[in-house]
Length: 77
Figure 1 (tube, one colour):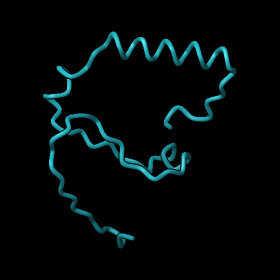
Figure 2 (figure 1 turned 90 degrees about the vertical axis):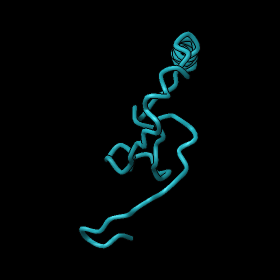
Figure 3 (figure 1 turned 180 degrees about the vertical axis):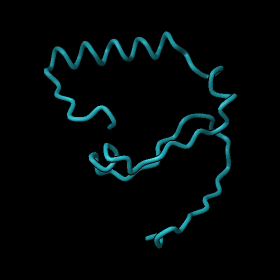
Figure 4 (figure 1 turned 120 degrees about the vertical axis):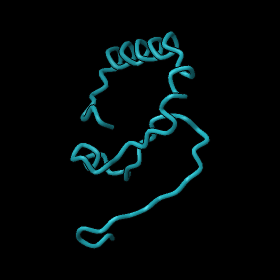
């Protein structure tokens, strides 16, 4: 546990460009803002994105969720 007004320094090798979530595994903690996103090598991310694949995955999830009556309790998790 960090003391009040404390800080934490983290160092890691930046060899995997992406937006990485850092969170615990209690869903409502994420909803309440107890998570952070580490944006690693921002300028290197865009060339790695394949929007056709991303859109296809989103459409597949939307279809599955509608067909199976999936209830998403939270958009953050």
